[in-house]
Image (cartoon, rainbow, N blue to C red):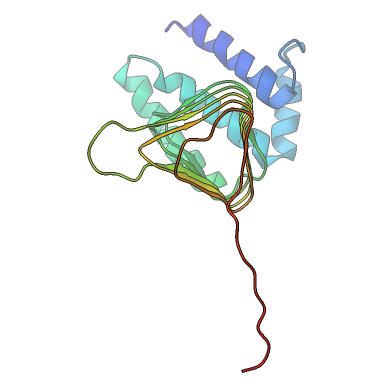
Length: 184
């Protein structure tokens, strides 16, 4: 990937994810202001730099991308592995406790809230977690499995555990029973 292609790709990511509109006039000043005001935007800014650097064939830039990703993971408490494919439109509700495996392939307009995990079980065999366009993963949810497909426009409810495929246009919740017992 050439330098000009990488810069063009970064500008597109930043316009969509930080400025909020792909057709908006690009401005480093506006991006800087939004990143100063919000850790959400600051993390996405630095993650996209690491993401684009990691796509390079050069071992030099791939190693720098890994170092940058480790650094921002420690600072913002969000760990999106560089092997993951994340299309444009990444939105992080609260940058705390989010982990996304390198085996994830995530579509456009993906929204995720705090304390969510998207990961694999481990073991042998092929591993891939496919997440479609327009997916929302609410707080404290887990998507765990080696071969899982979540369709387009799916909402995963808060504190849900997803370990099977979810068809497009669905809402996935895990039912919990709350009970209060009095006395001894």
